[in-house]
Structures are given as structure tokens and as C-alpha cells.
Amino acid sequence: MGEQSTDRAWVRHVRARLTLQVLCPRGAELLETFARSRAVGRAPDLLAFAILQLTLTPSLERAADFATEAVEGRLSRSLRAHRVAAVSGERAFEAFAAEWVSEDRSLQRAVTLMAVAMDAPRERREETLEDALDAVLEGARERVVEFSTAIRGPAMGIYAFGVMLPLALVGLLPVLASSGGGVSTVALGVMYDFLIPIGLAGSGFWLWASRPAVSDTAFDLGLLSDARPVSWAIGAGFGAAGFAGVGISLVAPEWTAPITAVGVGSGTGVFVWLQPVIETQSRLDRLEARLPDALRIVGQRLEEGNPVETTVASVADRFDGPIGALFSRGATRQQQSGEPMATVFLGDDGLLTDVPSQRVEAGLALVMTAGDYGKSGGQTLVSVGTYLDELLAVERVARRELAQTTSTLRQTAVVFAPAIAGVTVALATGMKAVDGSGQALDVAALGQVIGVYVLLLAAILPSLSVVLARGFDPVRMGYQSAIALAVGGLVYPLSFLAARSLVYL
Image (tube, rainbow, N blue to C red; front, side, top):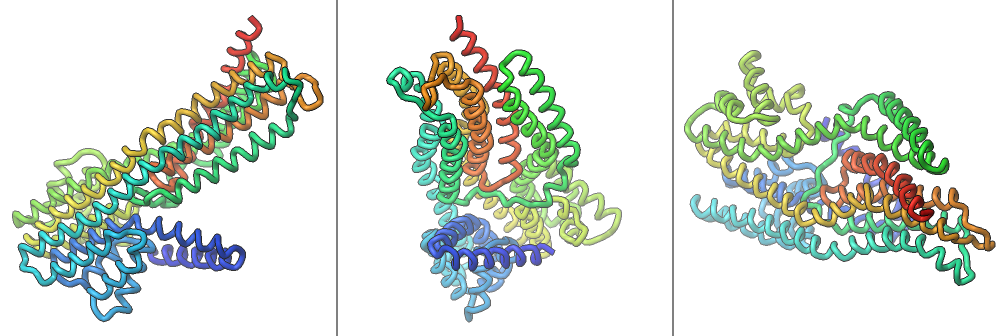
């Protein structure tokens, strides 16, 4: 079923690319560059599983087959195609590395070391394979550091020219009036509610396209099955919109009510809808974070001669949280049904059908494979845990390097932009800014134009922060934007009210 879904996705991608090639040849080239930069992010995963198979059976052919089965995506399909076309596994890996060298130079060195390891004694082979994995991991680390260094300037440029400067211009409207000029409300609406948001969205896409895909998390549509019913979300949204709109109209001007109702209502509805999905994703994150430790302990038990069935049960007793619960369910089911442990976890109705994580599935597949090899399999599984821990470390480095930038974008959307917008609108209208005809600028018209701009920022900036930190994850993007919409929808009119009160004092 998973392979059919992947094939359908690949067919859709090819059709879209051919269509774009006809309509916009340059666009097709850019899309291809973008797709390759996304795909190469799976290089550490792919080569890690190839190297781990080599420690069990020194065959590059089997390593290629095992890696392509364990890891999905374009990079995996590329290796599979070279494996079919080449006369040997070594030639397949060499052709594969040559195809992707422009995106990741470390692949060629890693592949060369893998080939050298095949002719080395066993002790030297393991050391050489570790060097091969270190090479591809170092390539991933370098891409993260280079991007995090280069991204600070453009990200701050988005903050300055997409948020601070437009809001400052609103505050300068009275200065324009004092010099005898004015500005049309329609022109302000076009600029703030159309041109600037398009520019921000385009800049955000460019940043995402430039981002190394090391820590991208593959989004599984199956996660949405955990979402609350849409009717609940709609009901909560309309209820929150009505309550907030009526409440704000009692203390603030009437024109603020639609802005508050839309922001609080849409934010509450999306928040209610996605909250269970976010909890599921958090459990998956905790599960993946403890997976390396669990694999190392399983490997140690296998080295001691314990069968995989009793090993799984002992691991369940050592861990709490999602990883302990998963192993506990596996041990209980195996004892009750007598099924092989591989069927318990990886079968058509296995426990992992409810765990949409390729990394967890691949890790447990390695557990079952290692169980067939006994002591040597246990030694390899200990290395598996170490390798996966290093992969997670690369991802943590990526998010830590970008933490300051992503935090600034989120906080701006939630608090700073709505607060500054409310104050600048109050100052501009309180100091008699004028429109293009020389008449005093309508407070309601200006306030609603900037209010829509604030809501658009609340949708765009948190989504961008998620994309930079984790890759394309529509659930987290929607969830963070929902929080910003609900909070910003209240902060904007309240800050306007507070500033306007000071203006009239």
C-alpha cells in the first residue's frame, strides 16, 4: 500500500513537471533544482541503512536493496534505478554518487569508503564504514551551518521590510499631511493587503527552497484522522468569533469587531481542529527521540544471546512514554497470539500501522533483521542506535541554529506586529492624516486595512518559522498560525484603544 501511494505521488510529480515544462521552461528548471535540494536531505538516512547492512553482510548489492526498501523518496528511487542498470553494486553506488555530487559532495567520499571497506579485514571494515557514515553526516552538518549563517540577513530583511517598515509608514501619514500630501485608502489596501503579503509569501518560499532538507519531517496525511470533527471546529470558531466580536465592540470602536471576530474565530476553529494532531506528532517526536537508546539496549541483549521476543519485553520494562508503550504492546500481543515478532510490528495489521514514522519502521525492521543474525546482529544494532542518534543530533543542530530567527518571526506575528499596528493607526488617525482628496483619513477604513494586514502576518510569519525549523509541515504551520490569529485579533484593537486614549489625554 505504501509503495502504491509513493508511485502515485511520483506520477503526479512527473505530470506537474511536464505541464510546467510546457508552460514555463524556466519554472520547470527551478522546480527541478528545488526537488533535488529536498531529496538530498535523506542522504544520511539512506547511506546509514546501506552501511548498517554492510556490517552484517559485506555485499554492496544487498546494501543497496536494503537501503532503498528502508528509505522512501526520490534519492532512494535514484539508487534503485542505478542498482538495476549497473552490473555491480559498486558501479551502482558510484553512478548514484556522481548523479548527486552537485547537491552533496560528501556522497562521493562516503561511497568510495564503502567500496574500500569491502576489501578490508573485518576489523578495518567496520572502522572504514564508520568513516563513510561520518563523511555523509559531516556533509549534512556543513549544509546546516552554512544555511543558518546565510539566512540571518534575509530573515531580518523580511522582518524589516515586511513588518517594521510598513508599520512605520502608517505612523508617518500625519507628516505627509503636514506637507500637503495625502494617500488613498484604496492604495493602502492594495499595498498592505495584497502586495506586501505576496512579497512575504514569495520570500518565505525562497527561504524554504534555500533551506537544507536535513531535518525535514515527512508529513503523513494519515495524521489528520486524529483531528477533531470539522463540525466541532466550525462551532468553536463561530462561538469564539461571536463572543470576541461582541465583547470587543463594548470597549473599542465598532470597526474593530470584524477584525477581532475573524482573527479569534478562525484561530480558535483551526486550533480546536488540529490540537489532537499536534499531540500525536508530539508523541511521535518523543518516540523517535528515544528510539536510538531502545535499539542500543536491544542490541546489547541480542549480543548476550537473548532471543528478540524476550528482548522486546525487557526493553518495554526499561522505558516509559511512547517507546515503552509500543514495545509493551508488542510483547503482550506476541505472547497472546504467538505471532512472529516481525508480524506483530511490521505485518499488514501490525502495531506500526498506527505509527506514521518511516524512521521508527526502518529501525524496527533492523531489529528483526538483527535478531536473525544473533550476536553479530546485536553488535550491528548497537551501532544502529549510535548512527540514528547522530542523525537526530544533526536535526537538533539545524533547529538550534535557526531558533533565534524562527522565534523572532513567531513572536512578531503573535504580539509585536499587532501591538505596533494598533499604536501606529491610533497615532496616524489621532493626528489627522489625510487621504488623497485632502479629507481626514477615515479611522475605520485605515484601521480595517491595517487589521487585515495584521491577520495576514499572523498566517504567514508563523508558517515561515515552522518551514525553516522543520520543513513543510502543514499541521504545525496551521496550528502556530491559529495561535497568532487568535491572539493578534485581540492585541490589535486593544493596543489601538490604549494608544488612542493617550492621544486624547
